[in-house]
Amino acid sequence: MRGMRPTQPGERIFAIDAVRGVAIFGILVVNMMYFAWPFHAEVAGIELWSSTGDRIAEAAIRFFAEGKFITMFSLLFGLGFSMLITRAEARGARVAPLFVRRLLVLLLIGLVHTLFFWVHDVLVYFALTGFILLLFRNREPRTVLRWAAVFLAVPIVVTTALAALGVLAARSPEAAAQMEAGVAEQRALFAQLYEQAFATYSTGTFAEVTVQRLADFGLEFVGGFVGSSLFLIASMFLIGTWFGRESMFSNVDGNIERWRRLLRVALPVGAVASLAFAWVSLATEPTELSWPLALRTAGMFIGGPALCLSYVAAIVLASRHEFFRRLLQPVANVGRFALSNYLMHSVICTTLFYGYGFGLMGHVGPALGLALTAAIYVLQLVISSLWVRRFRYGPAELLWRRLTYRVV
Image 1: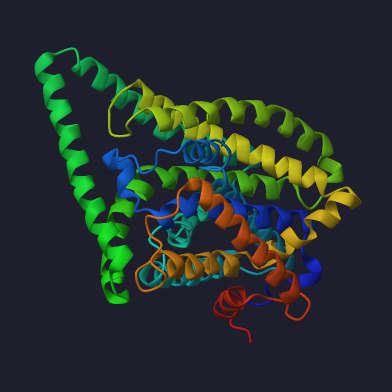
Image 2: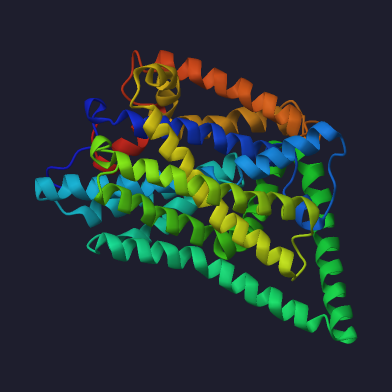
């Protein structure tokens, strides 16, 4: 690690901070539903709200946000890896030991975050998936993109195959009855898990909630990460690496036509795929092996990255103009301290919703959740804009920096 140092404030790229600040908002938009209600309800098929406002808000979240901002964070992580390689090569330093140390520190932060605050932490997933990037540090940009496509295709192909098997099996009355019984059993199990989780999160002590959180993390890790998010994160890591190799952020003017073409292509593709995802998510049960499940998966793994990329392109293009740059400055301030602001979400929201705090679990639907999200984000805009005047790093960024680079 000789000669290596973290990115200095004067070396920051405004568009990257702006994208990161938008991602912080989008992550909270999606997570708010899961702060307010245990995630088991979705698998159990439990309807949590019936008002028109909440249904419209949920549809908007599914379309505009779900799967779009974890991809944005993932892209930025891969971009950071590419920039780290560039700096290491320029200084003749070895990148692998430094990057492994960086991942291990992130994993430690994520595990602490998971244990004491938030079961749906993404830092653990980023740290574990990040080791894949080391396999691509010397690969050609075209190869990197091809593997990104492979990672996106795997869940779509697997789910489509399972759906096809389910549809074929359903032609047999006996097999159809067995499948229906299996789905009913799974729903009943998750309904029971939901009741237990709801009771613990809404009335339990900190110790009781911690035990519940660990149990839920096991379900989330196997079903959410290994079964799905791993492929999405890995793909966007590689796309972010490609962005770095092609200097898409460091030389925006030289890549302006690429950015415009990306916006023109990604926006309609992402909109159509995300519409399919939102419609299927609201109209069907996620446990049924059927064509809607395959469509939902395709909508997520195509619509999420595509709409995410259109958001990124729009932000980058807007940041070239002084008017929009001034508007985005507070957002970029949030992005400079993205890790601290992400962790702040959990501190605030678990205090609001859990029993050892204000006990609002089960009282906030998607519509009110969006308002609460906006209020928290405005608070972060203010705090980050004040913080940047006096400090170079956020508290979590400073910890990550010191443990990674062994600096004070």
